[in-house]
Length: 600
Image (cartoon, rainbow, N blue to C red; front, side, top):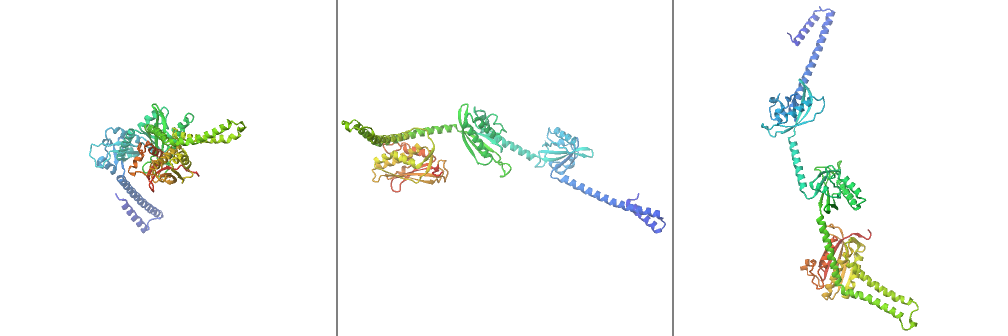
């Protein structure tokens, strides 16, 4: 049999001979030309077919290499789960030779109990419609045979249906999910430890997402939510569940409490607004203390809300924040201790005021005697005129008696004012914080103890540098501080029989250099008051003992004035200290936060 090229060569020779011999007629010549044209067309088609076959072969080889060398494992399974094709990556993942895996049942490579799940997956893929998505399958590999390290322990099969030579097949991409599973196990373990730690805390803790929904609540919070008879902000057995909207619960509770308990409703609304501000990142932290009723009585809780950002979260994203953590601590014991301490401080301050009045008693008698004697004199004079023996000298009406009666009344009013000031000073009442202007406070104090100083021939001077400046404090307690310091200075001068007898009170504004008692920040505007005297001075070796209770060196004192004064000043967010004067004498200073100026 002749090959196609040989047959074409002989046909060309025959046509050339016929044409050269001249024996071919027109019909024969036309037929020969048509044959020659057809031959050329066949040759062109043959070359095109050969090129197409070559392209197909190159493409097949290319895709075969891509299939073998792809970084993702691929495998083709028949209906029974046997491996029809598998690439090199998948064979390496399974730790076996590629040729030996051909036609191997895939279930023999899986851990026990995985066969049925795999076969059900293959059946679902083969029976699915073209283009339909089938749920991926995660399977564990058997670990009895040694495999190269690091070897996968689990695979995810992402499969689709394809048509093969023997019918529908399952074409699967094999993804190593060992690290993913290890990460999930580590995450679950971390979450478990976090839950265990939160449950072990004595504080009540919840975590909110960016929209204010509860994503985590520790055991103490859940017990706390079940306990109250009247639930505190955002808490009830239902509201402690994961997914509950904490902010909505707070606002609903606030609106329900407006009529019966307006203070509690306002407090709850303020907590909702504060937590919302933290979630929106309008504030860095929110802190509040509130009271709630439980079955065992009233409790005080300290609530702190702080932002909780996911690691790597970028500022300015779609969400304003990643959430917040809320911590509540029962501070009932501290609150009760503060109340008891406050009551004890008030009692001690009252005792100190009584002691101060005892020191002033002698001068007080003299101060009251003057207006009372004067009133008595004017009263007797008026009575003598009314009871005069000479009827002609008796006044026809009371017009002439009016000046004497007015003078007597004025003296009685003066005595009454002295007694009223002492009553205010001695009154045992609760502390009431209110705006207090400093200069009138000092002037009132000087009126109260001016006669005490004048009786001892001690001059009182007031150099004001604080006109129009206001403090926020309790008027009586601040007045008590001034009385204690000035009386101590007067007594020191009198007992030492000093030739120069003067006490100077100076005031001025300043700024704090450090944070005072956790209330005034460094650099805050302050008012400083200095009481200096010309007495014998201080024993600086025992400077700290000055502020100890019952450490007075005077026989008439109880040693309560300075310690109580320091407690009062520190309770107002300030500081009290002493040092030597520029020329002998003693200087006592106290600094208090400025509330406002006259122009505010």
